[in-house]
Length: 458
Image (cartoon, rainbow, N blue to C red; front, side):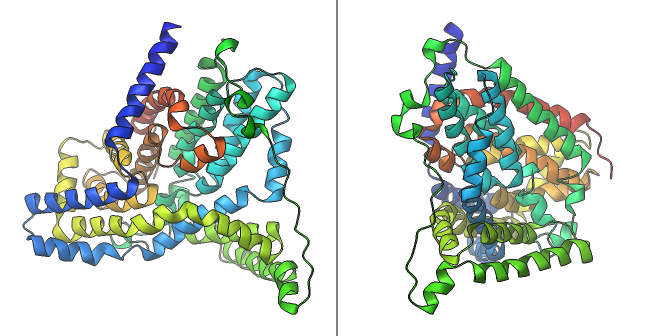
């Protein structure tokens, strides 16, 4: 009991610290812009006016990337709320018949969602938590809803190692912003490289063991079911039926009937066939968005149904739209004033070829707490991580993978990405961060040892 009390006290301390000292993510972007400006003045010969010019030159360099990442969020969110996905969630969540089964199912299903698409996974995992909690209560299975949500949130750690990882998809795209420095790196060298796959598998197994067995609450008196937490959450709504609309005009027929969508959907499928099977090309950030658009067009059917879902999904992308230009401005300061060269030299000074991946991941983890974004943060870090790795003889692909692991680790103790997850689950971050913090420590150790000792074959 004392250990549980100590853990709760630590969780409260950590959460209070974050709430007191960490401002809104947009404000962080502004503060980091000022910090980059000051660092450029101190460590480079650039004048204040020259630094402002560098900032302005970089400010609009990420417009294409901002659109790409916005679509990842919107299409993933819309896919998670399709009627067929809702039915599959209900069916899958009816399988477990024990507390261990409930928690293990939660980890496995959430992991699949995050691996496929992080925007989809955030909503999918939250819906999994709610559905598992409701069905467990109906069966008389005693589980703690807060702990279950911790089990559903923690696998978010692996999203960047999956199919929507922004850094590996970006460097696999022909015109990415650092193509001159590192060329195009196919996802076979990042997402599907054994170095990444082995470390990702080890991380997933660790999460399964932690939440399925090690951390599982045993005292039923202290458990809180979903209906005890909030009775309104315990109501699972059936998939919404198509609204019957009396069609009176040709425009209404086109809008509320699926035939137009299906014709366009066939065009999407034909292009995907051409891309993968005729050209033999791999997945990149544009093709991923193309694939998810294909899915939601087919699964929603009528243009009206898809438009409704996309409109509901769009608010989730506001952070990307507003903040990415400021991060691009920081990139401009770092690149055009020479600040990137100074930081690269600093990283090289205390790294070796063996230790660099782990050091790069740790540095990325620290930065992630204040820049909670996989894509925009890569724009800031890549200009100094890639040159530093090259100087030490570390392959660019290995540096990208180290960044992927380091950037995602901090998400377990930083609430920025968890906002849509918390909204669906009806919890605050402090309600489950104590559990994800334990996983944070374990996964950090696995990350450091894995990046250091797993061989990277070029």
